[in-house]
Image (cartoon, rainbow, N blue to C red; front, side, top):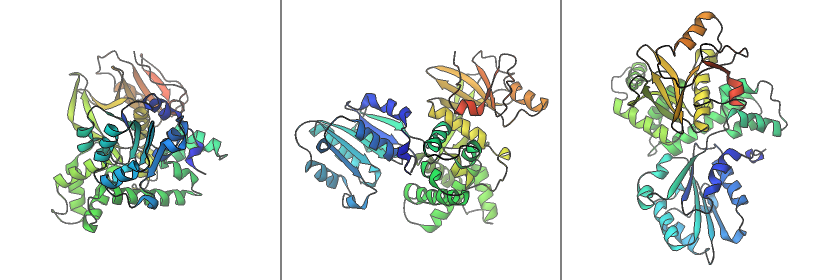
Length: 406
């Protein structure tokens, strides 16, 4: 059963206005998140005959001979003729200096270009220089919870327990096709290794691969917790009984690679009183809980930041800019900003007792900003108080409610 069963309209409606524009459409996101499916849907939607649609998947061995910009230019030039053409290049990062060919196509032909890739460097370096102001990036994430539930329903699969499964194992589309939890774990482990080898390693070096794997595993297992690169260094040097196993600069280099491969995203701190965004990263969040699931030994998700990570993933999927809030007394889990407006968000597993309620709602106490404030938890009983809105997380994830910015 293919993930093409699910029509991911929220992404298509963002991309459609650009179908005929001169802008190069860059569809980026984690490996196996569904970028190829989105590209195929765009290709099907565009009203043109098949001869005027040129599609190449660079992970298909049939195109293994296209290795650099000259090869790509030769391939396209032999197939393009009169009229408007639509060029679709899937996982184009495998082509050396591909950006030169893309810039050449824009200057020579009447065409609309769509490219996908599993690394955010697609929009850095020479591509951004050659096509300054002429690219538009669209981030494709694994299934959100509402998409996962819809996919299960369309597949005729059981949805009871879907939330707990999604919370732990995330939304990579192909994991829903696996027959058991063990099979899901194996699939995610293979995917993690593929990302490590294909997107993170600069060269095939086993010692580097092992260090990178350990850093990635540590960061993903601690998604959403307070972050210190020095803690990573101290932990790895301790277990390897060597003060030189890994350096601080190496950890920072690996974190940058992980972000570019869409495994994690760093979230900066926002000083609420000073209305200032700090430059340093306060926390790193996994962009899918499945990658945390295979890298943690915890058997109780209430002891982890899985739920907080899930809310973060949903916020960015809805187009919010997200920060960690800092008050003079404590932290607020998230400050979510969209269209110049913001709100404050606390996330809790359950508001089980008065002490927990006071902690979560009391986090907003030092804030003098009148922007909306929300506490999200799995409780079904509405516990809104003192102008602070309480919201059920599952209702939020299913789209039954959203943060209201005023």
